[in-house]
Length: 493
Image (cartoon, rainbow, N blue to C red):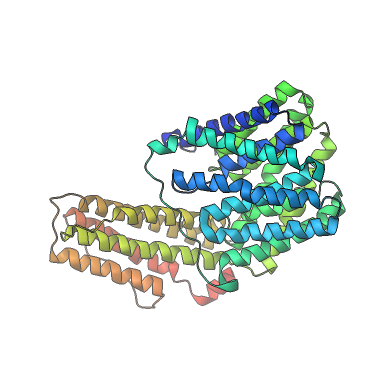
């Protein structure tokens, strides 16, 4: 958390641009004569436009950013219009929650639009928005998204100077309730319903905090284990953020200049730590919310205690939902991502072999980029199994071994692709045989067949064959931890 690398200072630029974009949005809202609620709405819209839009191309990011108000304005109208109709408001909030999670099936754009829709409804509850405020809030959203887009795509579009980012792997497939995004939409709606009811019993005014906690615990998760770990991290980050708020935000007591500086620091912290630690990001989110309540003149230690209680309710709602409502097991999700990664290893090997054989059209480089994306998803899926709080040491050791061997596979594949890129590299019969053995090993692992995956002989001197040998050895070693006896799998489930 303290020494995480930042290659090319990407996180630093991401965070600095966020401060600039959100600051500009708030200034624009102020120059337009908007009230404090309008400025808060605009700042949140700019934050979401800069934080959640993650399409792999700049053009795609611009399209998604342009669509944000198209989704947000109708949701804002519904939230404000139902302000005096609690039952209809609550049911609509749950519908927005489920639709926002379900939208993930359409990739990064669906995820961004789903988050923006949910948070637009959330901020309407945060500000107790009413229909007479809608014109100002509409203008704040539009102006702020434009300001954020101007900074992101005009003033500081550092992505244009970078190689295009690899597209994230598509979500796990399936139809109906077999699709993970569908099951999670049902889970999130059920968890949010529990949080909404219990949260209103805790506080009739701040109940939406519980729903928000449930929502954000489901973001970027795909299994029961991931959701439970994320819930733990959210509560921990909230506790730390409240402690820091008592030390910093409460003494400031909403004074404009110190609070503006504190908000800027919080925004930077959110963006800079998001890719490193969810706990740290939640610390900064909690401190940001504390500062905003100071500006609104309602901040007190009792309010911070209430926020912690509502966060606990939201985490409990998420936990109950993933445990008892269409559960998606960590083992099933992890196994699916590992199989996709192994099939990508197969494709990389085949492309590299074709390139070495003289094919002018074979290009293993895109496959390597895809493999890196898939391995990142495997690490995210396996994270609950290697978490320090995991009470099963044997399972933790097995998960770590699988990760290490998959990293070995990736290293050998990268080396093989580098050799294949050499114009003087040539093909021989031993290379074809080694590629065939790699393909057979992957097929055996992904099909779950019982026959053993043979260990290769001593490595040859030729670079391409040496990398294939290393790949064979890693795949052979993977056979044992991936083929867990059914009794152990039942215990894991």
